[in-house]
Length: 263
Image 1 (cartoon, rainbow, N blue to C red):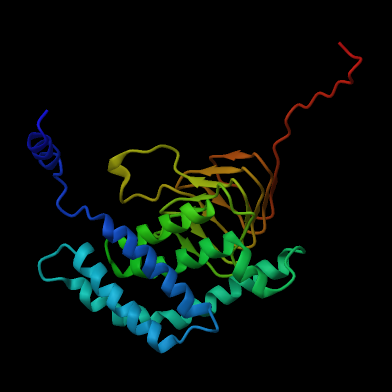
Image 2 (cartoon, rainbow, N blue to C red):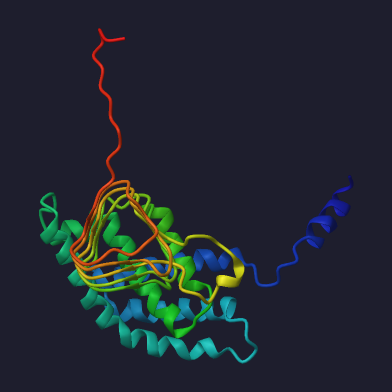
């Protein structure tokens, strides 16, 4: 095949008009700079806020596809919310420090806990999602997903003092509701019973009430499923129905142990 003909065939299949990979890269840079602005004591807030504003303008040009660019007005509203987001994240970090005996300091939580990083990026993306900025919040949380192994949709509603321990493999769906002081461990899934495109505007994911602990690899599914407050969900549990407050749900597998001499 001649080179010119090959080029034409490739170009003919590039049919998605708004697909710009640069958008993904700039959204990741925006996320990193936002994290530095809010947390790094050596970062000058004023100068970084100016740089963030410029990156956000680029994101608007690439990701706001309406002709009149209504996304331009979002930035001022968003930065007004940053002090409150920072306050909530301090509660998250304190909850991790207070609950985890392995955490020697709050600084250690900020610097080394992937669960905290995933929560922080989620909270920063969630406010943009609520305002209605398309695509960028999802790119932010997918960046955190790639870095930490935690997949939190920016549309989820999560209360303060949230603790994800060990982090890897956690999935929190778009319409999940998680109340205050909830602790979850690695491999937990808050998902939908089934997936269909016509459920786009339907609550598909569970509600977790205040003070619940969910241990490793538990799966909780369904928009009508409510886990009552202060309940404990054991490891490897599979739930598709609600449970009342103060419940303890366990999964007991059959375990057989044989010595080397047994047949």
